[in-house]
Image 1 (cartoon, helix red, strand yellow):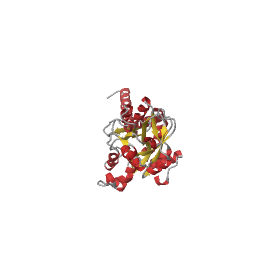
Image 2 (image 1 turned 90 degrees about the vertical axis):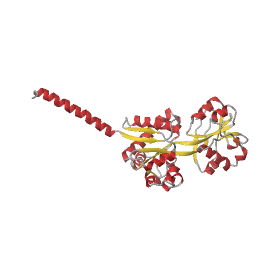
Image 3 (image 1 turned 90 degrees about the horizontal axis):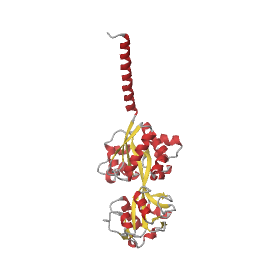
Image 4 (image 1 turned 45 degrees about the vertical axis):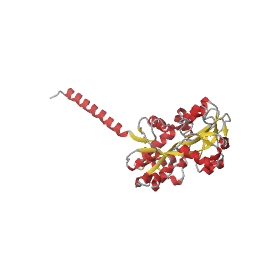
Length: 325
């Protein structure tokens, strides 16, 4: 039989070990893990995921951890809602959420009631149309593209929108569409192979920054009537976003939203939404594209908001449309 002091010491050791193990279990239980699916590695939207992950980790003192997963695109992100459980967050243009709920387009052959359980959280930088010209005029109208060789690409959102706009504004016969095999608009512009190119990405987009740093460029700014005719969301690229562009540029964009499902509990959705907005300015100081996010962009969300997100917006005094509640 152990002496009293030895028994006491062993009791303390066992108790301390149990406390440490118990604290570890409680810590593991307290940590909220979220899967975040956005885009393929190397893209601007994957980089945004990296930045958002760090912002959430910092803003919650490691209580919430975002794990990034590569994606082949927004359709895949939405489609995975069918099989995903728990805290699954993904990015997509809101129009795809509407089509998924209706069982239309790419979701026609695989309809699912799970699509009706998608809920919105907050906007992220939109896919913004840029018409870039080799010129030192700064901000120009659409007519500046006339009689120019322009590279619009092939098969992308930007290429489809550019083609649609040229047709909509009777410009198709007034420009020369450059060979789509030219791989890089910025390089082709610098080499004099083309007069202009179209790119669609969050702003300020790296390829336009690099082009503006090496040569004079101009950007097309659309009129209010032209933007209305496109039926797309209005987007302002603030003056100074690119070298030589000293005025605001009015263009269009495809909104992108961070969504989750009803599987995410209200506290997790509240914390994620609150931390995003609280860290947005700090993120913008590191990467400018976060600076374009405003509360007005919440209106672009399709479907309804997650109750946890609604709780944050109400608490913060941020007005949200009744249709999103």
